[in-house]
Image (cartoon, rainbow, N blue to C red; front, top):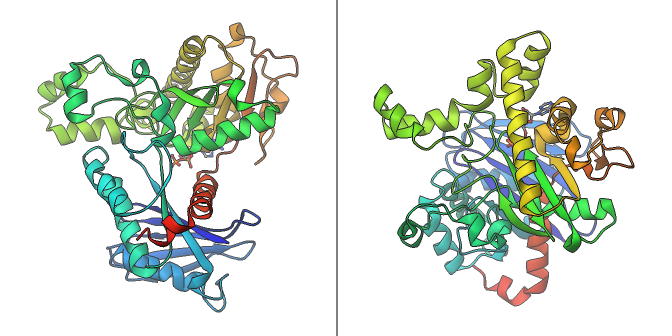
Length: 408
Ligand code: ADP
């Protein structure tokens, strides 16, 4: 059974086609510059050169049509017909308090996602365009949605409430939601498998460090706390996002610099973090390169970035009253041995003994980077959000075939 996974943005759309009997990716690609001139479709099938097609793609419906044409293309396709796609799974960033797990799409689910536009104005409207575009092209195929926030719905109120008047929570649902939940779900399960232990007995801190970065305390398989908040701005220092700061800085800066609210928002989301402190780049590779060449600002940015991660690990170890493993994942977490070393060097008090040779190994496999006698293990576990979306979609369609057949 083939499942198509879609991650729709406002002007882009990524896709992966899975064969769920083997969980192999049959094809993957992306459409960029939707609604602009010279849209680009990039398509990749195992070990064959990437195919690039430039054309005019004015909306998401046309984008999905182009993807389906490519998947069934005589030369570059992998399917005999679009009927071979049995289900479609979508990534949706915000599920608010309405969704604590993945669901099949029906009218009420679409209505709820629309209600959440306010909480994720950049993401949820784009995801809805992706969902409608699939409906237009594949009206009889069941669709599921997998929410980035759902995994964190297990957090207790003491983790998710802000210490502000509770009327704001009741009226506007202002609270911590957390993000990267699909990744935490996948990585926590893989980590337990790797450790050969039951997830229900583990205390994990997972550090999802990519362009966007967050940490989560996973207690007995459930999210207990996480560093991102009502939006993905809170918590760790990121590529271009500030992460935690004194909230009084915002009105103070608006006043002193005569900024609009939009400008203040953009400053914190797009012009802060690694980019602001290093003055060089939001990309950790370039910051590390500059640091190695002796750039003092790059060094400071690198140290601040690592220090914030270390602080969250310490806080979450205390929150869970213990720790079995720290897990690094996502672009920076999986690839930057220097960052992992910098984070862990201040954690010897927890009984962490990093093994340099293991940390330096480059691999796409899950691995342990501490010594065998380290009290707390540190792992690198590559994340795979698309596979989790495909698995959830497949499970929902198999478990609820009747619901799936009337889901549109
Ligand atoms: P996102 O999904 O949030 O866009 P990813 O998890 O794909 O991000 O991570 C992308 C980031 O990973 C890049 O911006 C880059 O900074 C970082 N990255 C990738 N490879 C390396 C590396 N070898 N060393 C350090 N950072 C890396």
